[in-house]
Each structure stands twice: as C-alpha cells, then as structure tokens.
Image (cartoon, rainbow over all chains, first blue to last red; front, top):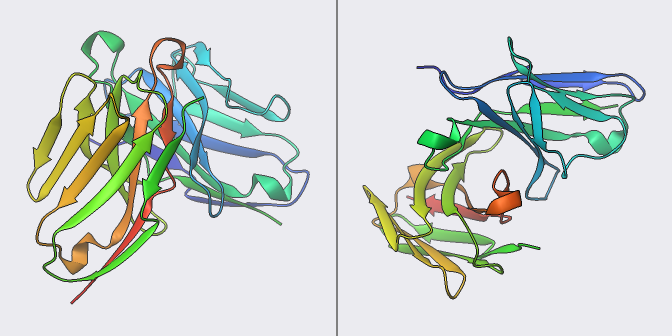
Length: 116
Length: 114
C-alpha cells in the first residue's frame, strides 16, 4: 500500500513562472490537506479538500494560489507568478473518509520549491 | 487562535538516556494530538496519535501523554539511540470548523550521540 505520493520532489522556478505541485493520496483516502513549511518556521495549514470540493482554504493566500482535487487524478496545488517568498517545502497529507477516521493524517515526502 | 509551543527547541544527549519532549497548546478544544518525526529534507512520519478522550499512547520505546485540560502533551523516549536523531513535531487537530487543520509546533531538534 503506497503512501502519499508527491511530485515533483524538487522544483526550481524563476520569478513570474508558474509552479504546479501534485499529490496522490493513500489508497482509499478521500481527504487531502496541503501544508507549507517556510525556512526556519513550522508547518502551516493551507487548504483542506475532498474530491471535487474545497472544504477549508482559510490558510491559503488569496492571490496566486489555488488548489483542486478532481474526481479523477491527483490533487494539484498551483502557484502562479511565483516570488522568492514562495520558496518552501510544500507537504501534502491525506486521511480516510470521516466516518472511518481516527483523525490521523499521513504525510508525503514534500515538494521543495526554489524560486530564483 | 490555537498556538502550539514545543520545549526545548533543541536537545543533545548521549546514547542511552531517557528523554522528555514537551508540547503545550492554548486551546483545549482539540480533536486529537499527533507526534511526528521529521528527518532532514524528508517528510513527516507519524509516531503516535492520541484522541482527545485518551490520556496516553505507547509504541515501543515511545510513550506520549495528553492532559487536555492543562493544554500539555509529553513525548517520552526511553533508552535513546543515535537513530532517534531527528526533529520531533507536535500537532493538534482542531474541532468543528477547524477540523481539517493541524496546528504545529516548531519542533524539538534531537541529537543522540554515541
């Protein structure tokens, strides 16, 4: 049973380009969460999604950032017109449906974005 | 707003010592508390999960306790080994409208030397 899969593991972009980060949850998991870890800071919640639905996006910047979790395929975190301050590790986590949910989140290895 | 604090920020000990890592949180209305381990440049590995109704959980040499009323959790590591060297993160999960969020501390960076 594969864990949470994130790709790319490392991504380099120049200022103004777009970054797309992908996350495939664990098999049987229908909830996906994105977190950001800035250098020398703790992990911060960004967005919580279920299939085809954004549940809570209160942690995501209003501009340039968007997230989706389509019916088919991975969840995608999209950052438009990247700036140097977007350089960080972006972690995806997943959990099962709430009716069978202990509340435990399982994290991927992260995608490390560097903006030049 | 929930805030999570971990003390100490860093800890360096010789192999074999028993360790205590501390975590405190400001809002006791939590769904659960989870301890993670993070190795440099890697993801998070879940160590222990304590539901809000529980007092402690054990796994091997690890024991985590939860005192929800005082907003504290402790991770106890017995007979530490060099392989335990990593950053240990404490996270609490909110309730209600914040159910989807984990609030993380900044971590305790542990070094166990042989």
